[in-house]
Amino acid sequence: QSALTQPRSVSGSPGQSVTISCTGTSSDVGGYIYVSWYQQHPGKAPKLLIYEVIKRPSGVPDRFSGSKSGNTASLTISGLQAEDEADYYCFSYAGSYTLVFGGGTKLTVL
Amino acid sequence: EVQLVESGGGLVQPGGSLRLSCEASGFTFSSYWMSWVRQAPGKGLEWVANIKQGGIEKYYVDSVKGRFTISRDNARNSLYLQMNSLRAEDTAVYYCARWGVAWDLVYWGQGTLVTVSS
Image (tube, rainbow over all chains, first blue to last red; front, side, top):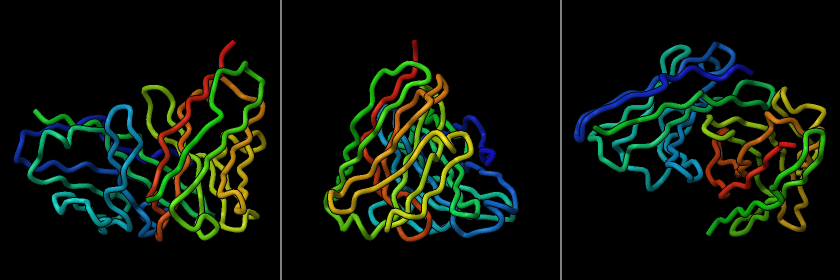
């Protein structure tokens, strides 16, 4: 049950794109399609952005997209906006009904 | 509208116990897996426990096994977390969350703070 590996921070200017990686193992990220991503603003509860690697819940802008290759999942945010500045977490099923989060990535919009 | 409202947090001494509650509304509670997720101050999210719809199947992160017990009362639309033998490292905001369709946490409560300190 080791945390998935995310960069501690990323940054980008308004209008640019950024990608946040999430690296696990074949026992979690690499072994299942059940990878989701969450956005958390300071003092707020997390919000689901992406589930099943690439799917977006209704109401989430299509600027947010997900992908996966091998043991690494990625979240791409295009057309960066000021309100995208937040912490982002990946989350993966890890077998036997257990789950694991990534360590989190702080996104700064310059 | 789906709502999850946690309660029961507070200050407790190391070795002590606390019971968290989460009252659910706006959906058929008995139809969904539920979870507790925690976040230590200034730290990341950590999945703590899952419970299946019927309340029999329960799963935990290794660090709380044998100390924490997740349970539910479907008649009361409520989720619980009994926390025993609390340690300083259990200090965190504890969130109640409802599962979606694919091991994703769709709805979250506002969280309740547990502080373990002497």
